[in-house]
Image 1: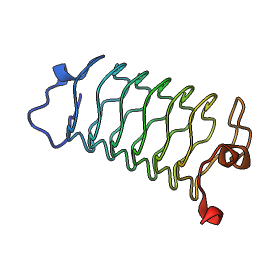
Image 2: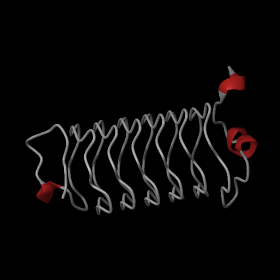
Image 3: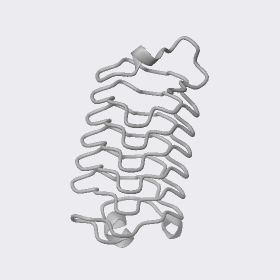
Image 4: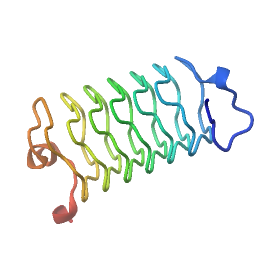
Length: 155
C-alpha cells in the first residue's frame, strides 16, 4: 500500500518517472522502490518519507526537505540535491555517483557504504554523520571534506 502523506491532491498515479512534484507535501509517505527517475521534486517535503530502494536518478531535489527520510539502497545517480535538507536521513548503501550535493545539509545522516564517486559535495554540511565503507574516491570523511564539505570542526 502506498501512503502519500499530507497532500490529498497527489495520487499514486502521480508517482512515476519524470513526474512534476515541485513543492509536493509527501512527508511520512511510503513510496519505497518507486521509479522517480528525472522527477522534479524541487522544494518538496519528503521528511520522514520511506524511499528505500527508490530510483531517483537525475531527479531534481533542489531545496527538498528529506529530514529523517529513508533512502537505503536508493539510486540517486546524477540527482541534484543542492541546498536540500537530509538531516538524520538514512542513505545506507545509496548510489550518489555524479550527484550534486552543494549546500546540502547532511547533519547526522548515515552515509554507510554510500557510493559518492564524482559527487559534488562543495559546501555540504556533514556534521555528526556516520560514514564507513564508502567506496570510490572518498575513503574517509577527511577526503570528503577536502572536496569542500563542511563539518563541525570547520566552523
